[in-house]
Amino acid sequence: MLNSLRRCCLCFGLDGDGRVKPGQIAHLDHDRTNNAPDNLIFLCLNHHAEYDAKSPQAKGFTIEEVRGYQDRLRHAEEAGVLPASATPASYERSVVQIAGANSVQAGRDAHIGQVNIRVIKARRDLVMPGTVAAEPILHNYLEYLVGRYHKLKEWDCEKAGQKMNYAIVRQAYKSHMKCDVRHTPKEHFTEAVAFLQDRIRRTRLGRIQGSKGNKLYETFEE
Image (cartoon, rainbow, N blue to C red; front, side, top):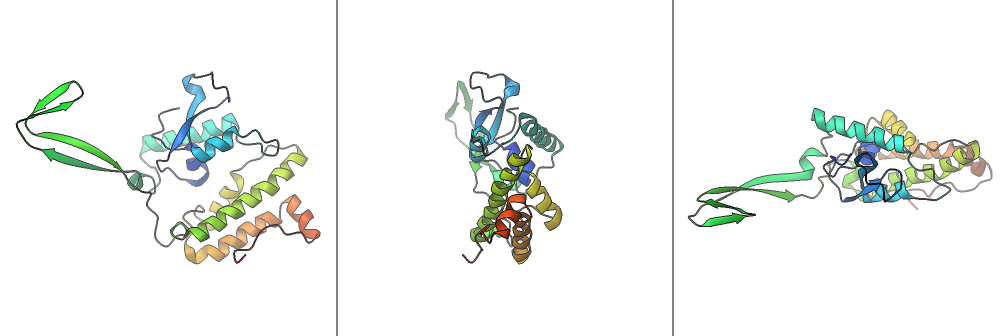
């Protein structure tokens, strides 16, 4: 489970985002004393906090769901088909040539003469030009609408006694827009907004609140 190369399986499973990110080791069964290898998984900071959330309003992710996403990430790594946003953006490798007659100390081993030192330099995440990710105000508004949908849908699921599936709206979005939220072309922003707002209005709570004239979300202009 830990062989994730600092890629969060929930980012990958939900958004197709396989970039290297800061994160933490999460305990799948929420028991911090259980350090069995199959109980440990790397999650980004945001998803770790969400996975460990105890709020009665949020059902969160199940162990089976997280393991399923981890399997998908592992298969993608093994097949060498990680998203384009993951591979070039994560690390830049360069070789530095050092020449000289002096010893170069590396741990306990001493090397004489010319040595190759492989340097791994972390790079900032690359942003695909022309997408909403290149203009954060657009990207943030789409993510805001996804969050509003989750809030209303949590209420629907709680009333129906169902398990909340946080991936469903992103899957529907990707099916309709042919891309994930981050990689939405800026020229399709209006269409993306209309799609997510419509999904919000179509939730059970959205229909109830809408019939009363209550506001379901802030507009982009607001």
